[in-house]
Length: 169
Image 1 (tube, helix red, strand yellow):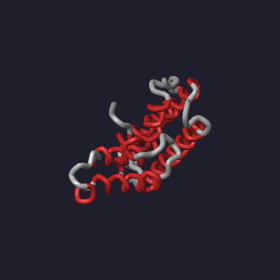
Image 2: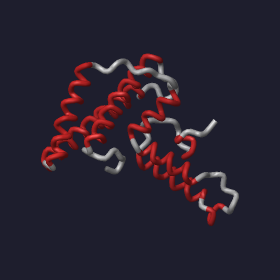
Image 3: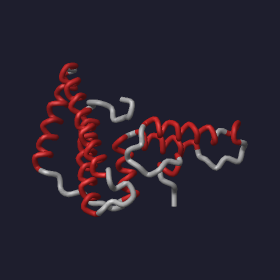
Image 4: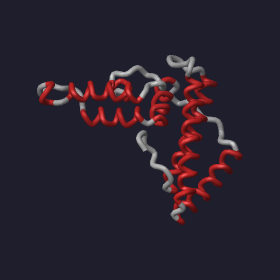
């Protein structure tokens, strides 16, 4: 079985890791993987370290990795028609802003995206607050629903070119 991103960086399986926690673990591991410092016998793959770092620094990817470990196969409830209608409306407006080069409207959609990310991250963290080790089935279902909405928002924004989905964007 291939190690998960948390194992690769030697971190506990927690959604609440900070970017500082992740970066410190990454740099400690990358130094130990460097051939000049570790000799030729290092068992650490630098590309695996980079991939683990990328996954864990991104809040959505870290949430998904956490849930995959703590509640594999968790099924999200169906998306609500109201949510789907809102995302369709936002997509149309954001796409128009990008196509017309309207910097003020693009900034507005970036702000909307930041608020959505923050809200979804907080919702996921709240669900996981008392369930770092074991996640009850209903809580896992709710968390999978949060991740489903989060992914939907992110992919829609990527398609219309409104902010890049990256931890340092």
